Image 1 (cartoon, rainbow, N blue to C red):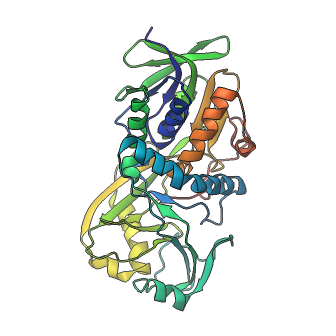
Image 2 (cartoon, one colour):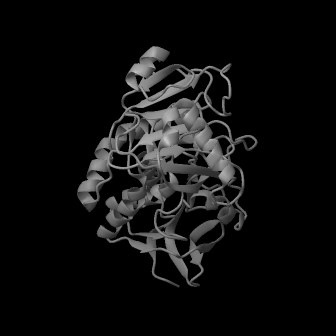
Image 3 (cartoon, helix red, strand yellow):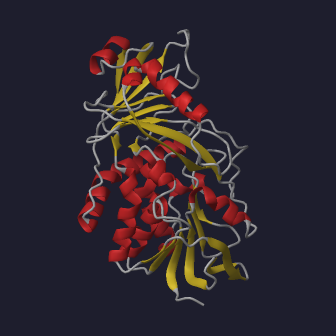
Amino acid sequence: MDRVSDVVVIGGGAIGGSVAWALARRGVSVTVVEAGRIGRGASWASAGVLAPDWNVHDQPALAELASASLALWPDWVAELEDWTGVGLNFRRDGLLNLWVDPEASHLPRDLATEPPPRCPGQQWLGAAEVRALEPGLTGPILGGVLSPDDAQVDNTRLAPALVRALSLLGGRILAGTPVVALTGSRGRCTGVRTVAGPEIAAGAVVLAAGAWSGPLAAASGIDLPVVPWRGQMLAFDTVVRPVRHIVFCGELVLVPRPHGPLVVGTTLEDVGFDARVTLAGLHEVLARAVRIAPGLGDLPLARTWAGLRPGSPDHLPYLGPVPGWEGLYAATGHGRKGILLAPLTGDLVARLVLEDAVDPRMEPCLVGRRDGPPSLRGGAGA
């Protein structure tokens, strides 16, 4: 048997890293076990957008979690940067959420054709006001909503920074080490077994393996219907930022990096664990982008990529104890809001593990809820 940790966290992405750091800051010994490279899953493939509510299908419980987590981000990221010395480029660019004329010709699918829900602190704009704010948006736009507090972060650096913070607190990181089984007896989880062989014993285990959480749970007889949703994205090289704000329009996402490319996405595909980029997927993304901002078609393409988001049937994450398995907790299924929800998830799950305290905001997200049939629509983010 390998050495014992107070807690083993399965998964080294933004969610697993945030939970591990939150636990380590409370004096707990933590081991993070990651199947691949740290932060190279959904956290790396994300657009890094921090926006609570922009989709008409978002559930109120998800919007509440997202808003609460966004409020934590400024202090949380500042502390993480101070602790690790890693710059994460958190910035409040604001987000412009558009809708277009449904009668417009050659309109690609999955562009928004109706306004989003009204939320406090937003500024509603007509078509002329949108174009005055962002002259490059010349498509068939009917209006937009500006959310000035929405932000972005360099998502590719986030998980590595969290794991670095954990290591500075004495935590252990096992990368390239897939977990093959949960271990335990008499209804209690006592650790994990990896491909390396020996059991890693622990007082508690947190399942935060992203899209792979579902199959790992199923191997132990646990019903945790987390499924992979593929998202394809691309980036353009730009000398001058084509847009000043983050722009959403249905499934279209435009993210102007402060010192780099324009990130454009995204698709939402049910293709299992296939994380390959496809010509059809890129065509779908580009068709939306150039219909809203035709000038983007003249920019040089920098790179393309795809990732697998951990989705749930009702688009809420799974947060809480796993029924029938004392000492086992879930922190997965965050869909496209994993980066945004990382600070709050870390805090809620750490308190749950150490104090057995289920925050009321977690109750709609508990494992074993009746969450309906799988669907790719709703609960979106970036």
